[in-house]
Length: 448
Image (cartoon, rainbow, N blue to C red):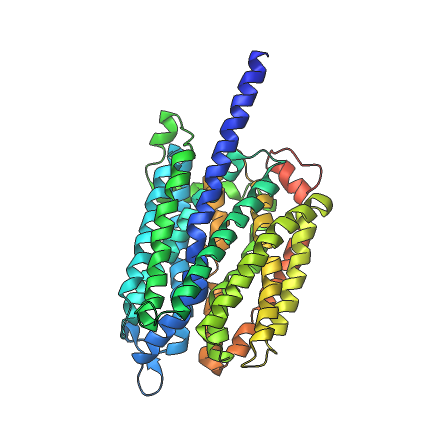
């Protein structure tokens, strides 16, 4: 066996080791997305906010009148605005210094700590809930930007669709497992000797503990790629670096065109994820156990959806597969407007449809973008991607909250999201992805 073969095999084994560790960050943090943001926190924080509201149903944070039912959506929107400020700075420093892993650890554990602190939410502490949500959601977004930026470093161009899809599958498996445990605790809270509210608080806090515990695995296996001393010195002055990053991105207009399309359609996806439980509980009158089962169904089908759409992408290309998923999202959200109240079976049907397209549309978007990133700019560009993924997804929750504040109808709020998927489809269809990959200086896969 030649020396080149030995080196190649060693590199392959090291890459596989990092990939396996990388999957486990999805396993760690996805519990926050499912148990906290999607299932428990929205209805619970809304209930706490209503208990603090005046006779007209309004609370007054910082003296601003806010309808209690809109407070959660506004808090999500505020958290994402904070993320917009933090993510490009973290990405720029990570790329300049090569010390991506310490930044990932700091943001992950700050988010996990804030999530664990949600155990303290009771009575009318809606402001504490809003603050903890802003911290947890913003740091979650920063950590995801750094985590995603490892993808082009640990996977070859032909591996990325599969590796990205496996990561999402790990996350959905973890979310499903923890939701089963949550459901057991929530439904049997009396037999466990705790109140319903205490059961919810335990579920919230346990998501933070899970996040922190399993984040240790990727932090042990992922490697920093060191930069030379000149690059490390250039990291001083984060805002100057942010401006340089944005200027550099203007040199790749096709990459920016994809980001614009993703910003629009993913805004709709993230708003559906964060507001679905509010819609189910407040508009459809469904109880918490029904919502947990529905989200569990989403998690299980999203595993199959992520892997299945990954296979479709190998045949039809990632871009066409994503476009097909956006058509499905438009139909699903339009149908959600007509769901009858008090009928869980139709809510489960809608959840099944969301599950089948959710994982695949996110996984393939991530892998497609990885082809559009110039080498050496991974963390900076994935910070911009994460701004589209979560940090720029403030508009959807804001529109959702404003629509409800103006009309008092969650049906009007949910149907307003259709425009994000329709416009995103049009923008993505106009992006010449092969030309965009070549313009970024990367090899063009046979099918994309």
